Image (tube, rainbow, N blue to C red; front, top):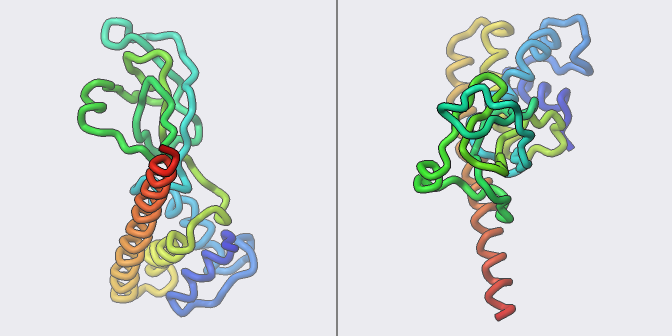
Length: 200
């Protein structure tokens, strides 16, 4: 089971550096991990609609300060890293990506912590700031360790080639993690279709 320290140690091992026991250690490795871990995690979570980091909820309506432009205003969740879609109805299929037609039919605007749209009620699907590494997929952990290694490379090695090599591996592992996540979604959808077909 992954932990913050275990992911940091994977990144340090990728660079051939000494492992740590805690982020609070008075070492260069711990200080660098402490500086870059959360930023690296959020960037990777934000860049792709990971199944394990998706959340759907009914948004809390606010006083609309743009009545001429939008019919409704809603509170953006505090843990929202990226909005995936806004719909009138809750979707039973977990990721259920937004189609172009839906995007045109259900436009929205984000300004600060407010989401404006013309729907009521309005359901939001978004990528949330998942801080529990035990919920990350194994390939996401591997990809994150390499992305963290990229951030740590210059402070800890001062070697641009080490950083460049880590970046290549980070992108390769990220691609593998995204493909596995997409395949899991497809297999789940196919499985659900088979069940539905079997009931008929």
